[in-house]
Image (tube, rainbow, N blue to C red; front, side):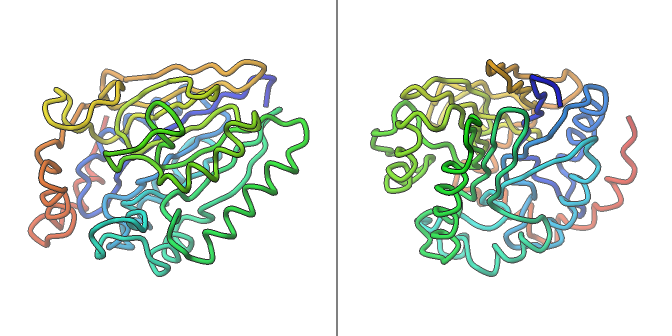
Length: 299
């Protein structure tokens, strides 16, 4: 590692062997990163198309991540282990069983990793407010990892974005961390202990200073949603597929990349009515059996 570590921050690839709807963009990404040679790849969740219900999607996602040209670290998203516990639809909510399948296929869901003068702490945002034993374990892990960082600077990685414009805001949209979780994190975010928060989930890129902390959203490598912004809440990000270059050194440098070969698939019509069509395509036997297609992709 040099004084400035080159990190490729990617998110939401939504991978599946049987339904490789977005494998084309993944192949382009692999080619891009092989040429750029980052020191580390961080993955902001939603690795799988429907890993919460289909363990084979998680296993395929792991095989694809292992094709990356360097070490990688990931955190889970709702498509990997289920929605945050406050979800109004029980069948989509996070569960111990779904989390355990992720741990088996992918690895630790919260972790700490030192790179240069920085410490990156990955968090499983899907177990916030769950009441699982792992939620308390993660909170203690976070406190210890920050306390033991010494002179290292701290960056957090999460699937869910913390907030839109302020930690104290009232979120009407349901897109951001629950208020009680934000209150817990505020101890570190307002206390000057964390300088950078990386997150996925939003399928748009954004780089914003909030209450003195830099919050960077990664675009999805797979698809965008409502690119024309006709019906989804507007959060001021850019809706294009791609990846984010983050250089961590004395300064934080962020550059968004939108490779021209990647296709801006817009699945807004799939999720307009609560993702009904998304899950129909991801689960129905009508759309299975495309696994051979991913092997046929050539660039």
